[in-house]
Length: 438
Image (cartoon, rainbow, N blue to C red):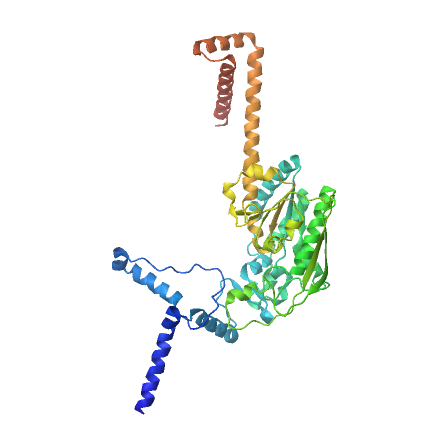
C-alpha cells in the first residue's frame, strides 16, 4: 500500500512538473497557436511596479502564456467547447449550421446592422464624385470593386439567433444605387457570385474560410481584366486555366477561420478546386499602371503574384495604410509616400472592399485625395484672383504710378510691389465680404 502511495505521489509530481520541464527542456515539438494576438513579454523588475503589485500581475500573465504544453492545453479546451457546446473561443467567429464558419461582422453587414446611414453615405458619394472627375481630367479611371461576402453567399447557414428575417437596407444595397445614379465605375462580385451560386462548376467559397476560393479569384481576375479592356479599349494579357487540382487538404487561406479556432482536430470540409492558371502575352499586350486600395480579400490576388502579371508595376495599399510593390515587398507606411505623385502616375485606381468593410469604403483614401485636389483648386482660384487685380493695376496708369513710387521708396522691384498691392486688395475684399456675411 505504501508503495502504491509513493508511485501515485511520484506520478502526480511528474505531471505537475511536466509543464516546467517542457518549457525548459522541450520534450516534444508542439505547433504554436494560430491567430492574431500579442504575446505577453517578460516584465522588467521595477521597484514601484513590485510594490504596487503590477509586476506580479504581469509576470503571472507571462507565465500563464509561456507554460509548457500551453498550446496543446488550449486546443483541448477549445475542442471540448466546440464538440460538446458548439462554442468557439476565437474572437468574432460564429459557428453556423452544418459547421459553416463566419466572422460576425459579415453577418451584421448582410443584415444591415452596420449601415452607415444615408447622410454619411451621401457625403462620401459627394467627395467620391469630385475625386472621380478630377482623376478623369488626368486620364485616370477610378473603379470600385465590391468583393463578395460569405453571409450573403450562405445566408441559409446563419444561426437562427441572428433572425435573418429582420434584414434591413445594407451598405451594399445603398452603394449600388448611388454608383448607378452618379455613373461611377464599379464591379459587383457580391451580386455576381450569388447569381452563380447554383451554376458554378466548383465552390466559390470554402466552408471553413472567410475569403473567396481560388476558383472565385480566377473568375474575378478574368472579369477585372475584361472591365479594364473595355474602359481603355486595349487588349491585355491572355489569361485562363487548363485544368484543376483537387487535393485532399485545403490550401491557404481556405481554412483560415478554423485555424484561428485552434482545435485539436480538423473540422470536416468539402474539397476545393484549385485552377492551373496560364498567362500569355506579346509585345502588343497592354499593361496599365495600377494602384489598388483594398482589404485582405486582395491578398488572394496580389500575394500569389496573379494580379501583378496583368499590370505594369502594381501598387497595393493595404487598408490605405501599408504600401506593397516590387520596391517595397515588405511594405512601407503610406504616409511616407507623395500622394499626388503616386496617384498621377497610375492608369487605373481600384478601391476594393468586401461586404463587411463597405462602411469604411476607401479607408480614408477618397478623403485624402479630395483634400488634395480641392485645396489645390482653392489655391488656383486665389492665384487667379490675384493675377486679375495685378492686371487692373498695370492697366490703370495712376494706380501703376503710385505703385512705382512705393516700390522706389521700399527699394523693391515694381513687380513685387504690384504683388503686395494685389494681395492687400484681395484681403480687403474678403474682409468686407466677411463683415457683410456676419
